Image (cartoon, rainbow over the protein chains, first blue to last red):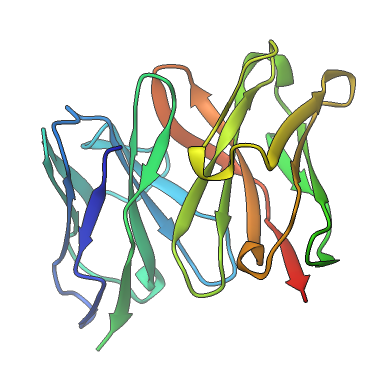
Length: 108
Length: 120
């Protein structure tokens, strides 16, 4: 089974800061990688699909990049409403899903 | 508009079973796959499997093989998740979510979650 390793597990940043989260797959997964935001007590929300595509309606300060084993998720200018936990998620041809461990983002 | 509404919270004894429903509206239920994901208190997301709304296909995470069953009622646009032989580690919020399309692993619409508490 493919493992998804996400880092850091938590971070603290100031409003306006650039925030970067990484996700590494245990083997090459091409671009089969999505990113989600989950706010406390809420269901996750997809932000980025296929590694670098912005989901409709998602602010442009969110972006993703990478392919193969290494992926990056970026918030270009952190806003107070971005406080949440972010997850990467891999999918395969049989629609088996694997989530990363999550990154909790807090305001400094 | 697309909506996914799950059944309410459940409290079960260890060893019992729980069945959670997931009712879809605003889209053609038979045209999509529904995934199930759970989240233990303070923990991350754990994938459980999926059911295809348009045929009899299902897939289960190996972790739950033998204890987990997905069913559906297409006339009611509703998917069901039943987990048996419950243990305390099954205490979690259980989510259903629509797969955007085949060959695309995006879960674009999620239910509100159903808290299942297992007591000994």
